[in-house]
Image (cartoon, rainbow, N blue to C red; front, side):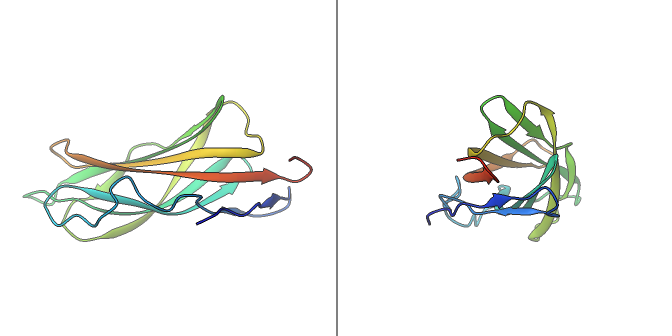
Length: 138
């Protein structure tokens, strides 16, 4: 899928981004007890990203795991806290907020990564490339 250019307006509530390559790092659905995660949607707000992930993980006692996302572009770096993941074997959808840790975004490409880790530290990750365009920049 080819990404489209999106203009950012200061008053806009959210800027949805389109993935340039929609193939996850784990390209096929997992059918084992290993954790699985897929980036579903990414939106940019003035100073943070919301990343919607689909994940599944397992544990014998329905223990919690962790979900974590990052967004990187040149010197700009956004990351989330480690959010609780429900490891009961079902698929879950969750919005995870990644806050700016340092640097400023500019028009161009950025890399979004998501990771799910179960209670025993088994994990899976997905990475996607997105293009962002700010109003007045090429």
